[in-house]
Image (cartoon, rainbow, N blue to C red; front, side):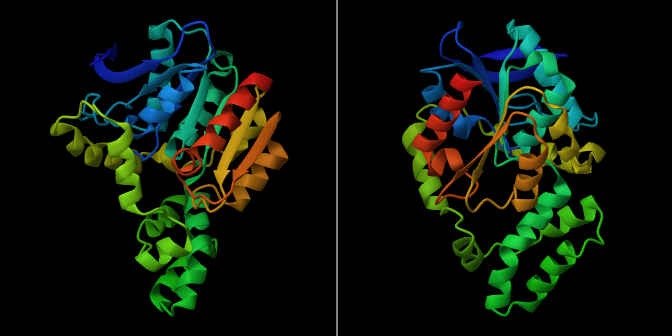
Length: 297
């Protein structure tokens, strides 16, 4: 398996496409997911771009997290170390969900290392993501008379909670089948079929799965996970693209409006008939949108 050694840690990565094309670096979500589920899309982009896709430190095929603390800024700095180790002058971060937070913080910290930045259903603020989830699910709970869950959503929305408190409560929202249908969440069976059809050799060993728990706890314990990164948008001078699914519960209307009103050179594309997994639910529109953005920047 291909690895880079960054600060003594093994980082699994995949590389597609040709060296002289613009480079996309994919920052996966979760926190604690993997670049595994994006492999097919990375190969498709490899027909046009040079693509780097990797498992963040502490996740899946990369080394497990040790005793040290780990936060958003640590992952961002390791991404910059990766760019240098691979000998890439500049690239375009493409961050999905939690990876969208990493992409924004990276673009802010290393403006000379990017040509543009792409956010795919990003999480820029734990507080506003929590509120977006509550906003999306509240009508379903009210319709079905589930009073305790409706009260939970209202508590998240009333503005009295800290970012950490709101996010922790949002993680306890009951995403039952009725809520998933109401919020257009895709069925697990469809997603599993996609993975089985498009990823023939994932190179996954049994120990990969257990890393998720430790990584996620480290990130949720870190203070910088709960920071509000929305003010960073106005400071990014390079072109910015926001892709959001019509029914996404991570990047809500507040964040979308904030991006539209404050991001210089910002462009928003809403993909219809999909929720959070835009690249899976609308693959052709997703690919075409990014290709056109990269060509026009």
